[in-house]
Image (cartoon, rainbow, N blue to C red; front, side):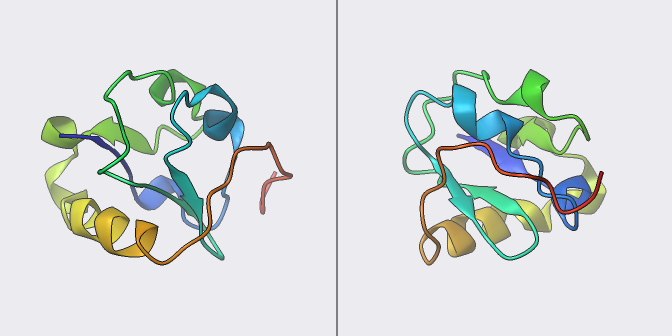
Length: 91
């Protein structure tokens, strides 16, 4: 199991979560972030840092966003690691 970034991140891409991740499991896409489920240690440090409530433990992802479990896995395999805070896309 792992934490998952879901729909509310898409279009804003706040990066507060990446600075608290102890295992550098966040990946940066053009419009949102993703979590590599192979590296996530389920610590939960990222979840309260997200200002748009986009991060959920895999078992708690709302039904309407279940596809993001697979999306995170697929995108994390292709995208670069992000470990530093950047300006969000939307304020």
